[in-house]
Length: 67
Image (cartoon, rainbow, N blue to C red; front, side, top):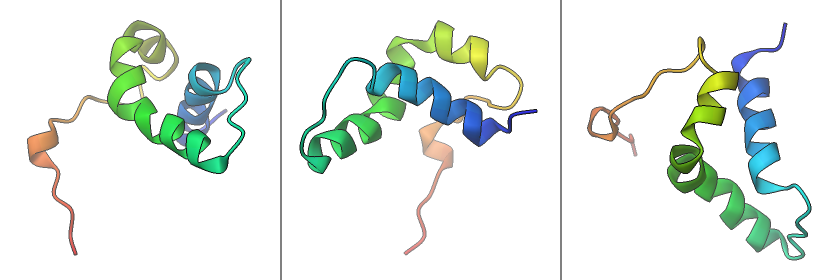
């Protein structure tokens, strides 16, 4: 059985890398980091189908970053 991280990587890979060449690493990094904030919400039905049991929507207000 595939764990949730592997599933989420697969979903991200299908939305970020197909038929695209991110020549400099910086472009790939930008596309990868944009996936959870921009691409996943736009493509939520397909993301939800793959990662339906392991993930839940978290309110950003409930997240804090420790220094």
